[in-house]
Image (cartoon, rainbow, N blue to C red; front, side, top):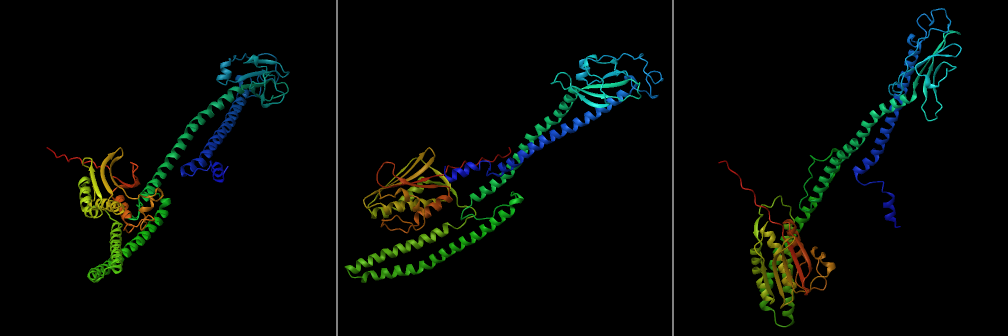
Length: 486
């Protein structure tokens, strides 16, 4: 077994979620507390009811109704002796009285150990030698037995009273009363755990909202996170993160200002050098000097294109509070316009450009941003397609929605570099076409701002070349008309 798998298997009891950790730690303690509380109530109530019943047995044994000692200290007419006569018969008790109602069974014994009267003849309990309370088991080992209280004799010749109560009744009474407490407690435990689960879930939901808000941030939206719905425990953390976002925003702004300033400063000398080259062109002799001049002119054009792309990229990366220019845009008309703008480059390189539009598709976005996306993709297709090739623009629908495909017959891109080409200044090795390596970076940045997704892949028909697919966002529903009162 590998190390990571063994570590995962050894830590199954340590959940990573806050809710799971709280429940894992508190649930056993709640269950143990409920069990301890139930046992403590059983013990305390058992002691209470036994003490109370013992006191009642003592009171009954001393009462004249049970044949005990009266106020004068005698029970046989006051002569101090047991005359062997005159014991009133006691009412007999049934099993219902004994087992269900907990009635006391009374026995009256003579001084010489003869049973004079009893309310339950079949108990089989003899007179206990020592006075006081005790638990007497019967001949049945599984029977709970009898609680016995033997009253002490007032004199050597006085009769004695013995009071019995069923131990089974006492045990059942304690069990039932304990059950009355344990059942609500048993119902309270899952309710308490569910409440705990719910409370922790609500607290973690606010954390997820903060995490979702952080996940939606990028280099163009570095505003502070709202603190009104953040739990107090993580306010310092969110505050520190807001400070980090502020410093990061300042760093990005400084970088953009540097690129913009550098691009602006380079545009003027670049334009002057291009003008000087144009003025120098008539004086360049034919031959090698003219070839060197042509290479210099091509390098100057690439440099001017690079400066323009840098300035354009820095402007596009600037944060925007709201896209006020967003409006419904007809994609078919926009694509036709883009193709028409780039037709001179296609004619110059003898590239056949075709367009096929499947119906009319409207997207709510900024027209300038959409134009930037399609212009850069078309420009790349025309630049990297060899002379005499073909570029096809197609607007159609898939199951996922409307898409725009731009297919060329160029060399294509290796599969492992399809994502790398979106990086700034990255160019596919071995490709000598003019370019700055910023076109696709500008394309993706503009597409993301407008909710589009750009995908590069090999052509589906198996032909050589590249397929650039732009997934358009679904159209927004029209707002409901306002109802005016009649």
